[in-house]
Length: 64
Image 1 (cartoon, helix red, strand yellow):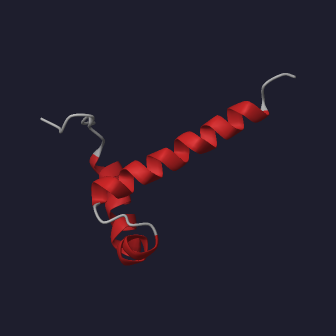
Image 2 (image 1 turned 180 degrees about the vertical axis):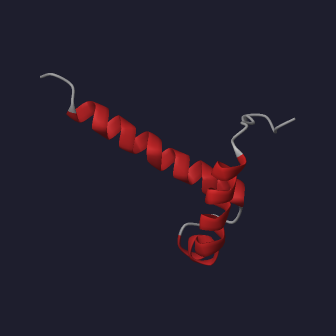
């Protein structure tokens, strides 16, 4: 059971593997520059980036 304020998700193994390999490659840099020290925090950061990009893109296509 996740901590309060957190939720669990299930992803395909290939999705998990993709992000885990990415995490291994940037782990040291992100730990120093962004304070991201866990795989979970890294995935949260990347998903937050995606949300921000989606919001920006959706705002650009709204009629005036």
